[in-house]
Image 1 (cartoon, rainbow, N blue to C red):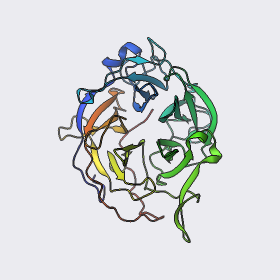
Image 2 (image 1 turned 180 degrees about the horizontal axis):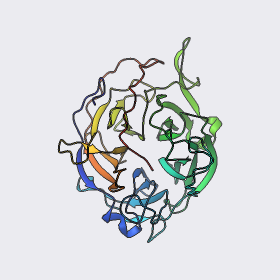
Image 3 (image 1 turned 180 degrees about the vertical axis):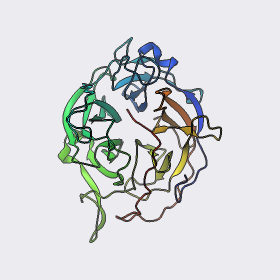
Length: 365
């Protein structure tokens, strides 16, 4: 399905499968997500969700989140990993209840089935990770309990959970984060966690030194009297539903990559200002059926930008999971380039409602 107003070229090209046999030596075989961030020492950390030591999604060695490191400089040849948080076996870097009972009820938040990483940012010697506490995968709405921040000062080897927490109040748009630094601020684009919520994405900012203070976050919003401005109640900047997101400032251009469940595709948008106008979406990796030979990829999600990307050579990490067989369950690398930003239509606080989301069986974790 094509997104109204979108362009489907240039499409991303496949580079390699970055997890699986290549990461098995750390007990990371079946896994997903792989959101990357530059560490203070220059290496790149990759954060993975529900991870298993055997192929696909199984019960062997279940951990989440886990972290691998890479010093790859030639991205065209494919990302390679050289170490894991935990040493010989990638360990679970943050507490996870693993409550498979999903009580009290799978349609309401409560116990913690798992926790998954959303995005990270490095400020000085410290890396901050946004983490989502997930109540249930079985629920239609994938209810979250809350989102919180954790930090590491030693290259991601040890992590500390903080009290900076945002509770889910039923479809809250501050649960699934992506964040990027610029001019002394951390800018956060976030949404609800489930892929059927039409609420869209909201934009916030916080001074870097106050990232662990929820009360210091300032919203970007619309008021009929003043228009768009900081410090007003949050107004969605882009429509939903939406899946995993990745916001990065590349060569002076703001780039937002994300999974669009309505279009069944990984798309990108660009903007010259974080609080300015966003381009229409470009389809980079299109979803399709298993066994298709038309360049589409079945049951995709994610869409994270490697921090060494340029506008002429953008590298995306895309997850793929066969929810029927459980395998493959992996992370793939794609490369593409971004078109010159196109002046889009002016935003309004009431965008057209998106189409109802088709069921593609995509999952995150």
